[in-house]
Image (cartoon, rainbow, N blue to C red):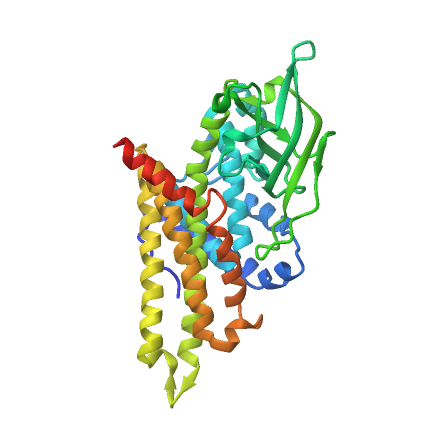
Length: 383
């Protein structure tokens, strides 16, 4: 059943309906096959760009739709309900555009942002490293400034890069000095240039249609103008971007949870035991009720955080709470959906098993849910 939404305007209702129609027409029918064949749907992101859905939160000046996060996240949810790979990809793209939009100079924005926001280019985000995931301040990837050529030379390896090897640009964070957390800078780099070597995609449990790779940088030369923000400002930029990215993943998780609930409901209304649909048996009825409560509670939490962001209020704590609750809900609801379907849920004849596998990573990326608890606790300590 479609999610019941209270949207802020007729324009918002039209955009969400556009996304829902696109998801039903273009995504739902091919998701399972493309995931099984590990096929990345680059064509889908081109279509999203043509529809204006790749740049929803950004200014119309740069080709965006200038929609509030409250609306953007509900569009993201609709897309993710049909195909999680697409929802995650859109969230990562928006997060990858954030640094330039929020911290870039006027000249940098004019040069690069329209193609990024308008859908011509797809982004990736290079923050984590093998030994610097939850602790980005421990990163070793280095960008060394060569004053005589006015370039940075990048050497090192980034890990867990969504869209690794297929992205047209990456937002990269690299060490430019030994000043700990204050020694990291942010760069916008082209996706294909000498010195960039994406490694073999990771063999993942789920989201197999979305390539996740490590990327080696071997003396990549970047013109100095590709540094975003001030030297040493990179970690602050990354953390701001992650607040937004956590809302995106939270919305994706809600979409996945809604799709799992819908799958379970459809089965429970049709499957009969003891002469009546299994949804009428209290044991399963109560389980489905708990699943519905988890989905709606998660959605409300995500939208509350989004509305704070839209009003310019602090939302770091609320973003972490939303990510924590929504992704835990997705894991629980998708697991319960498999249980409702019984033996059928454990087969690939139904999407429940795929959605359960996809839900697990939601609790891990954009900061594990243990890290979200740490962020929330630190925010509470500050008062």
